[in-house]
Length: 94
Image (tube, rainbow, N blue to C red; front, side):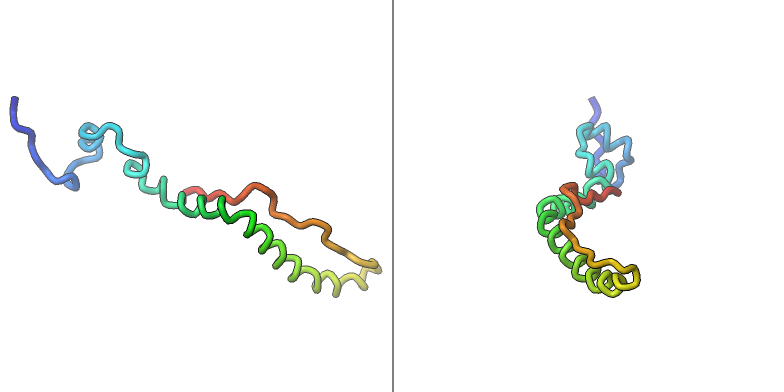
């Protein structure tokens, strides 16, 4: 048996690395895989709060615009009963 050739990992080819370490995690094989994972986890945790904050801001912006337009169309009033971005959060993919 011959002594193995020792080289730094950076000098290995992709195929050579896969032969050396067949169970390489996906984030090493494909660096784009894990780039947005932290953001998706953050959104999952924060979604109920973001939903309320974004809807409150949208309502605050829309109400004066709607109130200004109501007389033109002879409408008594327009109100938001419920405003939500839904239970499904945004999901980012690369």
